Image 1 (cartoon, rainbow, N blue to C red):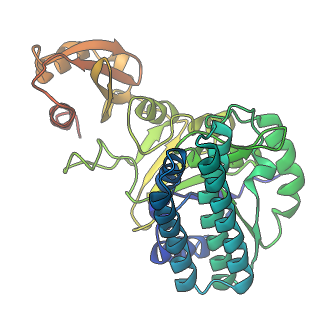
Image 2 (image 1 turned 180 degrees about the horizontal axis):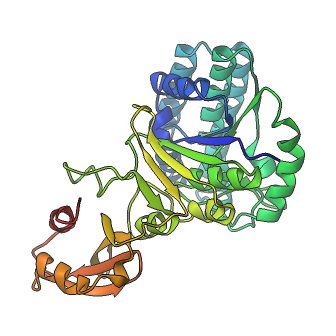
Length: 385
């Protein structure tokens, strides 16, 4: 099959309300190559679902009812603003009923298992993708919009809340459910984050797993691009919520991006790039707020020479670990000494060096996670060209 299709994933901030969903629709309308649209739960919905479970567990019916109603009202408001069809409103009502039934079950038992939690979690993505699918039917009448249950495709093991995808089964399911329609005038709208085990139970791929879902769909259908749309214009040189003067990186290699995700950057889910790397599929990260900005393209290509591109940090029981990400770091003479001197011998100590990352642990008790990232980014700026 010719590689010409795009998988486009929209995160929670990109589908947070009706206006945001309309922006997503415009992106899809403007690119006829988009064949699969993967949707996250609306912003903060997954947190609200957790809140509902905890309130039910302790028997706090007032909080349970309030948060449940807040969640239902949020999506009903979006549906109303998007002129959602009566048929889809009925489906939305059924999903809200499912939410209340699971909450009642937890309230009755005063406990919830990872299995029940995955059922509850799945409702966020199922609701938002349902709304997007109906919006696209309204906005793109010349295309057939198919609402695709991700659970029909994304088969996993039974490790609830961090399920492992079964790649062979995903490929097999894609060949029967998706492949026959790729050359037709069709867009599939599906859910990120969720799958199904071999016993038919709903599973999830771990928090923020929608990126991973998009990559799995991309791998299964031999896409030539996977897009990840968020609220920032690409992968930044540091966390833009902490550092004001970040630079956005035009290009990263799979290895650099994976190192960034593994070492604390929040823009990507650590396992996202495994499927795309297996098939050598480029991944684009861009802003749904401003899709004309350049964004970041992640490919197998590594810079030919040494470069430093970003800093990230992990905060854990053992303290703060700050990492610099780039290419050919292990070939740069005296890099450890140069960075150690700039960071401050009495503030940071070197811990690890690879081809794409170099890490330092904060040893001064006076430096918190915000200050450590600011110091590291100031050092990084010296290497920007």
